[in-house]
Amino acid sequence: MDLNYTPQQEAFRAEVRAFLAENLPVALSEKVRLGKRISKADTETWNAIMNAQGWLAANWPKQYGGAEWDAVQRQIFEEEACLAHAPRLVPFGLSMLAPVLLQFGSEAQRQRFLPRILSGEDWWCQGYSEPGAGSDLAAVKTRAELEDDHYVVNGQKTWTTLGQHANWIFCLVRTNPDVKKQAGISFLLIDMTTPGVTVRPITLIDGEAEVNEVFFDNVRVPVENLVGEQDMGWPYAKYLLTHERTNIAGVGFSNAALATLKKVAAATMTGGRPLDQNPHFAGRMAQVEIDLMAMRTTNLRVVSAAAAGQAPGAESSMLKVKGTLIRQELTSLLRRAAGPDAMPFLPEYLDGGDNQDPMGPEHTAAAAPAYFNMRKLSIFGGSNEVQRSIIAKTILEL
View (cartoon, rainbow, N blue to C red):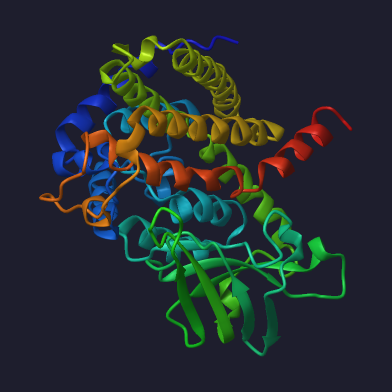
């Protein structure tokens, strides 16, 4: 297999670079570069720019407004967007729910929901994890009982990322408690403005309320919001998680973080010499760069197979494990490079205040918050311990 980019793919890369240079707002790029918090309005601005170009839904068919890029094109765009410090595209509607609707949903659901994802009318969040049902999603207890033409939903979801912004949530709910636990789960779409839905933000250690608890108290959901068949939600959930875990690898984010780390280490003096000449620190930088190069090759192998029509299996788990460890190490090294300057940070500065003093070099303001936030990577999307079990069972046949 040839892992080199073709002339056509390199031409596409040049097109992406030109687009980013011309259309990515400088103020927005600077917020990302300096690690400031990206607001809902910022995300909506960038989504609108991408949608006007026809690139927002990279992996959707063109008939539904997508770009219909292959896996290699998507990888190239991610790399270039991260290096240009573009905001991330929130994945919940675009690259998590949409593939499920395209594969398992009805045409009526596609016609109803997909255009509203593109337009920004709907902001989706994921209702999977519950207290006591995180990596073991088959243990979900949120109930949905059919009453005439509605499901009545009761229960709780937690760690719901950006749920404070969302007006829709896709949920795993238990519709049959009397069968094997994987067999009694359904995939339900719930309007969060429905009476009985309560959202309670959770403030994380980095000071931001990024995740939430969502409570359902006799929430009535029309039966047409059921995706696929009742009690068949488990294979739909696994299909979605394959997409999520591959995305979590974040090769583009790691490439950009490594570039920043190299600049900081070269400019930081310690013991009379640049930090990147310190043997211990330089050794850790070299190791993470080697790991990233190996993962990038693996990622190219996976996306090349996907471009040829093959579905990723345990490879998505491998990318998830290695990708999260690399991203955590990069934030750890940047925090170490920042030294005492990484200790204080002002929420007002991170929230985008232009006149706020970052209390140190500009790269240090977000060093500690990013480090703390990245701790969660090895847990969400299925903990790394669970991913290692998947790899052992499917590849090593243990």
